[in-house]
Image (cartoon, rainbow, N blue to C red; front, side):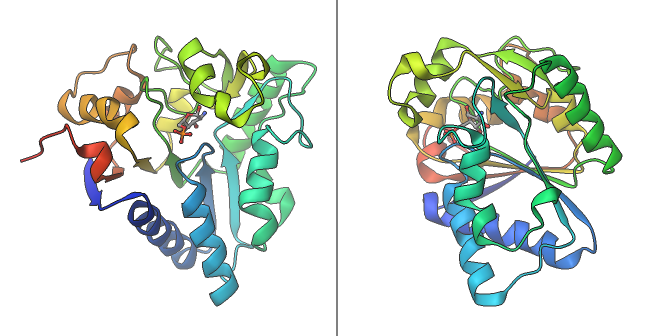
Length: 245
Ligand code: GLP
């Protein structure tokens, strides 16, 4: 794992944007795995600023988002579909049919998971996967205890995750109990992983990830130790207890 230390959230976002834009500008065909949550918001803002200034071409870029809540639809403001549209896709010129997010309203969720997994496979896999880190060590929505071999599936969200994400909803009761998520094995099949970590509330999870290389299903992010090309961009608040000397 390569660690890049950022001074703060904005610096982390700027560094992440540089890495992503470099891959976009240097390839003829690129498949990006994208994340939601608070962590990547400013990265997407910088990508939009870059688009406005440089008209960066996205016609050769295909995207797959990590996850989506079960039971929320594209027009629902709490859906990850809505998040991606409002925070990125509406502001850059990327063909909409090249952007993919699991359908949380699918009648048959199991079929939707296989369909999504196959779409990634048929696309040739993910070149660069952007990840955030849950305070409990989750990646995507792969919660503690998830098998590392698992592909795209429906995950029951822990109460810790529902509480952490309640800020995006009117109340805790409204936070869905389940989500479709790329599995850990789906994530690990990406060629390159870019993990962004910011803020004190991620510091204990980040310290565990950096200090303990043991593969531990109760800490899903530890699966990243199995991947040959992971870059972590973390800010000083997130790194404050890591004592990296
Ligand atoms: C959420 C998402 C993840 C995200 C993580 C961290 O629940 N499903 O994809 O990376 O948890 O979220 P945040 O960036 O808001 O702290």
